Amino acid sequence: MIDRTALLQQLSRVCRSGHADGLLPAAQPTGFDALDTRLPGGGWPLGALTELLSACGIGELQLLLPALRALTRCGRHLAWIAPPYPPYAPALARHGIALKQLWILHPRDARETLWATEQALRCPSFGAVLAWPTQAGDKSLRRLQLAAEAGGNLGVLYRPVAAAQNASPAALRLLLHPADDGLTVQFHKMRGVVLGSAHRVHCALAHGIA
Amino acid sequence: MLWLCIHLPHLPPAALTRLAAWAYQWSSHVSLGQADAAQVTGTPSSLWLELSASGGLFGSHITLLANIETELTQLRHRFALGLAPTPEGAALLARAAADAQLDTHDALRAWSLAELRARIAPLPLGLLALEADVLQALHGAGLRTIGQVLSLPAAAMARRFEPGASRHLLQLLGEIPDPRPAWQPPPIYRTRVDFDDDLHDSLALLFPLQRLLQEFQGYLRATDRAVQRFTLQLLHRRTPASRLDIGLSQPGRDAVQLTLLVREHLSRLVLTAPISALILEALEFVSPGIVQTDFFGGDAQKLQDLRQTLDRLASRLGPQQMQCLELRADHRPEYAAAIVTAFTTGATRLATAAGIEPHQPPRPCWLLPEPRRIPAPTALLRGPERIEGGWWDGDDVTRDYYMVRGADGERLWVFQDLHDGHWYLQGLWA
Figure 1 (tube, chains in turn blue, yellow):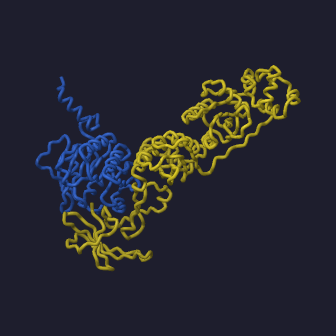
Figure 2 (cartoon, rainbow over the protein chains, first blue to last red):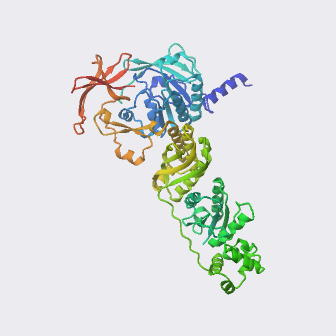
């Protein structure tokens, strides 16, 4: 006889991950082997929220570009909501991002940013939704997590490092630190995984040298 | 010939014209006129649609009629329909439908002249569109039904009454021609609705708007076009009109989609004064060829879904807040990219877009809107890259670019302007 508690746990995991066929959640490879081997599905979780807790200008966007390129090649669109600076087309084109599938949104305030992020996440045509919210309470983060589950897309929130102190319903939370030739990625939270002591990964970034 | 008469008593002339534009989607021969029995007043209150050529296009005449009835019901007009091989026959059946208080959605139909004659024979002669004194004389002679009038010898009718009376009967039966002027849709679309009582709540606009947009959809189908941009003006009695500019990510003509968009705009609107009238004006149309490839190319459902999401976002945020990136062929970094408003029409975007140069050195992901003056940096990580250009348009630059490390480990893209020797921050290697 099947252990009822174990079955319920398994069911709730399946429901959360939106996957009916197994325990591994859907994921988009990050393009960094060191990272992929550590992430539960072998990449950025799809249908879930990821938080990148980072300063600005240390390579935090380059960390995502291989995955974004793969998504646009499959015909998916990208939404970038409230980026801190104007994205620069030649750099993105060089990384292989299809510019025609990239939509930059500039909401006027924090509330609109959260609303727009939720709308974009709910639309499955967006392969990835990146947002730079200036504030995000627990309730709105939950809404975004649900929206990402509905849309099945890669939802990424860029937040300041200080936000690590507050709990979040995001499936994955990574702290990014600048390193000599790239980034050090520190695992802060990974749903379904108990983080051990060795939870730092180095990702070398070419800084545009593709 | 097969005529459908849509009898719309008490409809203001402007509304009838809008409905003519709507009706044009079903038939290229739409005629406005007066189908009341007493043809004394001049204002038209009926539409005639010649449908003999349309049946094949829309499956069958039965489904065509069902579609027309459904839309008229959605538009919430009080109407009566009559279908017959002659315009006057159709009008008479429509009057009969209205008078008999039948379920007005049920048209009285006569597909042939013989059927028409049989249908109208038992009807009271008062339904004939004849002058009152003619009707009275016929009644005085003991006649009660149309059948009895039609069985009178034509010569007797012609002798006894004005020539108009017998001509009417002959046209009714299709024995002499009854040409009807064809109404032409206007090349631009501008409609206005005046409200009897001012509206104080923008939500109260929704019903008249739905009707307006459904008529607009009919016009777009009729002229085989889609709309890219339109405006709504809410008129106030004393203050200037409130104007809503509504743009679509892709050309569209679906009334439901248009209504959703307008709703979003209205929900953001702060009403400063009561609304006395509404003007819908279409500014930018797209030809059918583009519409077709857009509608049917690729995965239609997903495309539709994406488009609706983009439109919803643009409606709430404002179209200026949505941008796309483009490459430009220029060596100067700030000229090598363009940020364009998302819903500029496809043609202009394609014409100016450039490709990426394969041997170009790397570039940062963020570019500051304007270079920012900084003190001379110390830790140069990479460089220099000399960039020169712009002598042709007066914005001549000569710069040496470097990657430098910032105080918090961030990587910055800076340059020294060789004209003035100063250092500037222009980008971040995010």
